[in-house]
Image (cartoon, rainbow over all chains, first blue to last red; front, side, top):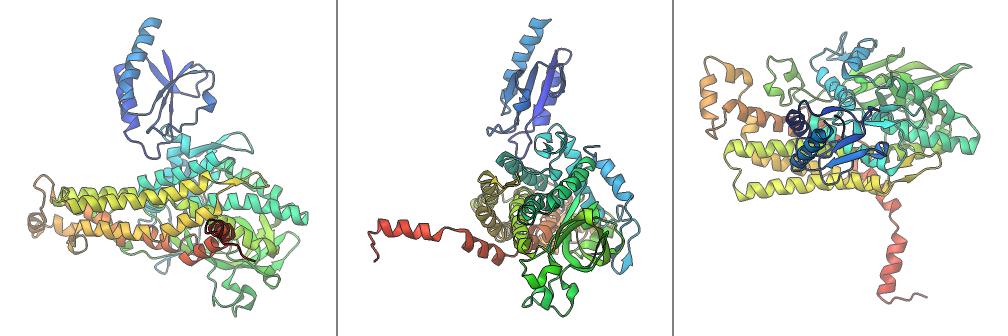
Length: 90
Length: 483
């Protein structure tokens, strides 16, 4: 499954966004392929934001299914969700 | 090429033929000079982060001219959201470099000119705005770093430009030709000058009719014939020539300033954005200054580094649990976040100018910068308090490495048993760098005088507060009826 990836600007994140995305990619290796949110093929985009201000500009993502994460704890839930979607699709 | 990578930026600098002097000698290889290079690395990061998905939301924008994705440093603010993102970008870069990354001044120059060239055209029927927008498109398409150059040497401060015994005390027109103008003068304190592709000149004060030959704005390639750069010294600068990086404090990044001399330099008309319209000199100064006072959100980012260093030093010294140390760190954070608040506020309260460009709330921008003239000094004082005197008395890296005395340095400067003496020395050197070394130029004195000295902001605050309204309400609530 292709999954678009979009980050907020990262001005003052509460956690290491890159590290968590790498962890998610490792957990879902073989099931999910992370690509740019600008990739026209993606229907679903994971938006990774560093704090609850959640200021990422998502206007260009209209019409796509969005998975919004703004705290480290959100990754485990997202991994479960993506796992279920990927398994269901396969 | 709408956006360069960091490597492409570095390569592009190598193609410039800048006339740079330092320590009385011409610098043939500016990019690799060990004293200058850390400042180039800081600008380079503004290119690399724009390519990084983790930061592109702040570091890039969509050009209102071409619709293409561009580096935010070449963008004209199209909304208050753009202004807020500029504030956040400044903090981000300060927090990653621990120094001045130099590129904001060009962004502030192009935004101020986008407003004022339009305003001049509206009054005089000139064509400056279209000329400027053509230039801007060139800057955006090539992802250029611009030095926004405002501060003239100013000579005798009690005299206007036309009254100065040396007319070059302020940049001025010395010849008007069919194909352009010839200018002479200088710009002082130019941050990042030798890391820039272009230099954008603006007048430094409001002017009167008799000063019209000094009321000029234009842009030139940084290596135009007749331009000479004389590098400013920084405290501890020659540590960058020593073996090892520990005594530098910041082993990667830095900043620089230079005196930029224009000796009869030709400027073609298509690069001239103000020519003797003295009535608009003050407006250009105020708009540029307001944008640049907002830009000092970067100091909150540098403050993040200093606070992190102070906390680390406290742990390495074994005093992190002491209540007074904890309280000092709280105070440092309080002051630092207050700096950030001012910049966010002036951005969020910004508004649209007739040109379409969004300008910060100028009162709040001045309040922001007024805080910046003070708080970093207090944050630095508290950092030095926590660090301890060893920060300025400890021996060099060479002594630590010495086969003869290294063991004594390691033994007697050991504190927390879980931390090496070298790491303790490293974090203390970083605090030294930020509070009295090369980075103190940017974190302290630039905070004081950059974008205008404290009194400049106080004058603007006094002009812009609505005192009459405050008095009116006070009198009403007090039941005062004046005849």
